[in-house]
Image 1: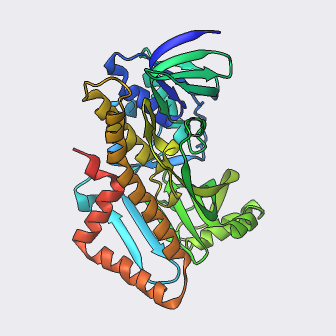
Image 2: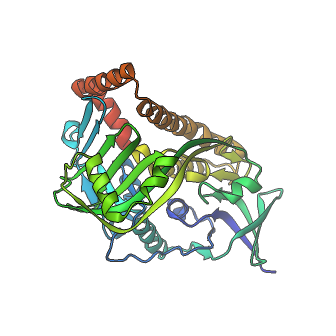
Image 3: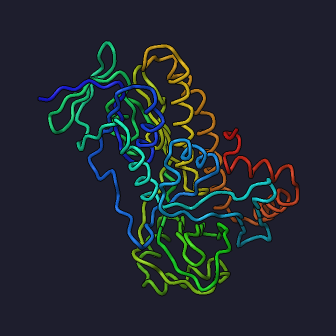
Amino acid sequence: MVHSKFDIAIIGGGMIGQAFALSMVNTNNKIVIIEPNNVNPKINQTFHQRVSAITPASEALLKKLGAWDLIKRKYTFINTKVWEQNSPGHLDFYAADEGLTHLGHIIENDAMQSALFTALDNTDVQFINAKLGHIKKTEKGYQVILNNNQQLHCDLLIGADGAHSKLRLLAGIEVSKIDYQQKAIICNIKSRKSFQKTTWQRFLSDSIIALLPLSDNQAAVVWSAENHLADTLITLPQKTFANRLAAGVEYQFGTFEILGKIQTFPLIGRSAKTYVKENLALIGDAAHNIHPLAGQGVNLGFSDIEVLSKQLQSNSKLLGDYGVLRAYARARRLDNELMAKTMTGLNWIYKENNEPLRWLRGWGMNSINKTPILKSFFQKYAIGSKHLG
């Protein structure tokens, strides 16, 4: 059995795990990332289906980590438009209103991960291609046993292994769940008309459609629907599905052509009861994952990284000190819970379709749209500007 000693062991080599490793490379800590899957995905000519709406705050972090310029393709959006089927309500956010050049970028998750891997290539961070087997608390940290019989010892163990985190389970950290009884249908489309550097979201009486542009005439679709409707939609022939989708956004972009496969996954919100234990911290989806209504999931993970790495680097206490880790957890929980509850509340508000609520909904959206201070508050929160500067 091989024994190795590391300062920091990161379980999970996706975007969040690699970004956290990059945030700590200048600390002289010996760092390892443990991941059973491919940590450097291949970027094909066609767009991948899993994408994120990256805020300016996350962009600033990725620049600081040296990964931003390595991302092979990213599409800038300058506006966000939200409208609904059952009322005249609408919301329009414009970068220019906040004195910004853009509101964010739509980026394929694989393209981000590949860029982070390339940035890590010039560092001493090690990768181990294996699954997590067991963990055992020691006096100074953790003993980590992998499924290839390799044994590691570390002072700080980081869980970046996603919503179904095995580390969270092994650490005995409970998780609260919200089953939205919905599925997200994802696919890529080609349109006849331009998406105008704008993300589009339409609330229908039975579902929510988000169009995230990857180019002027291609976009990633996230269509959130009740389970029974989602199951019906994904059995439709592609052409019928494309027509239903185009009708759902009032043919604003003409007809659609589906590119590649149509996929689906269940929507379940999760929140770990605690983000930290002594010598252990959860980040990203391992700590929290939310309804994809606003595409904020990965941005919350990047904010976790910013706060945790700052706490660790601005403190002279031993790596893994519980007080330091608790300061990270306190700083992040409120923000993450607020976003999760906002998404849950929005989802509920738009699911209910009685006449008084429809009127109230439309009035609320239009009121925000016509009130610059209120509109600016929501826009700044959405783009993460409270984390900038």
